[in-house]
Length: 140
Image 1: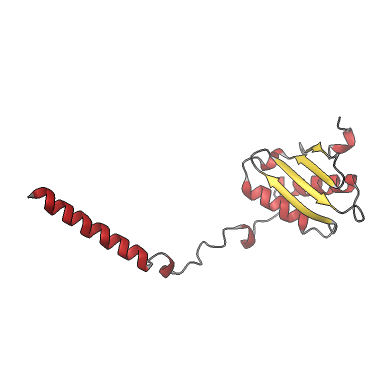
Image 2: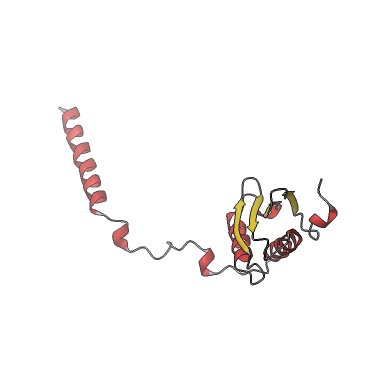
């Protein structure tokens, strides 16, 4: 079973599985059905200066879990648990600001030509002409 040391602080985070070497799966209620929080947590972990040996962080918002893979030469399991707990606490308390990189990059950058393509115009004209032809045939 899990030991008390595997429950960092009081953030509600717990270790689900850590028996596979260099892999830890966390239960993080904060990210359940919250894609933005999950992405902030992932980026916070991977870009932290203290996380040099952490090479993979995969959140799952459906199960509220986070899989972290790390290199044993850089970290021990307890170090990774502490780091994830600290970063999750920062994200949960609003200590991490939303920046442009966390927003949808496509919004506001699409030119009008992306919406009105030749195929769309042909489709609309074809539907209008087809509707008019059908209406003429039915009214005879």
